[in-house]
Image 1: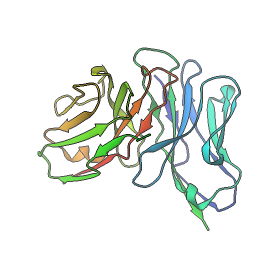
Image 2 (image 1 turned 180 degrees about the vertical axis):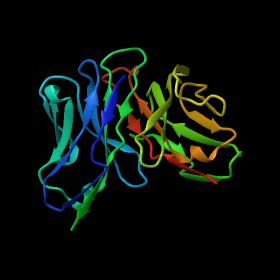
Image 3 (image 1 turned 45 degrees about the vertical axis):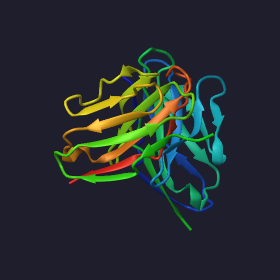
Image 4 (image 1 turned 135 degrees about the horizontal axis):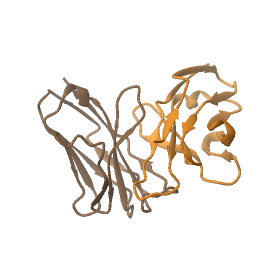
Length: 115
Length: 116
């Protein structure tokens, strides 16, 4: 069964500092990988996705993520955080095939940005 | 392009009452998902429709939850009777393809349910 672990429940950074949110997955093969962001009272918005190819993927709002097969990780990064990035971030995995396709989400990491 | 619409945004009910949520997906999207997001957790899939057929409802508590998508467009999710542990945000998502691996899911803002 596929699973996702986001080890950090809550992270606080200062505005302008760099950010890395961790995501580890468990799956028998290389899954499809996603990062979503959820602002308070809002639904989930897709930041970026990895299907295949270049292991460093660029997303919206200046975010990027790197897929590392050897570590089963898909960490999200941003070089300089803005106050508007304060939100909850979810990593998700899904199988690349199958009629019973299902996304599995991690428990999320809450990001607080200090001025 | 209009996004996924959900209503109501908030609902407060007492336990053992019934409640219904409505979702209108992005126009033309064949696949529709209902998720339950309990506070402090990631979304958990309850049911997936492709057009008006059910693809996966393995995690839907069928003794109290029901969902339908009669004309393959909008959908309703019902809880009857509600329990305290049903307090959560109910998210609807839709995708354009068949629900396969490369499909991107677009989420609505959700309905926050409080059961007292």
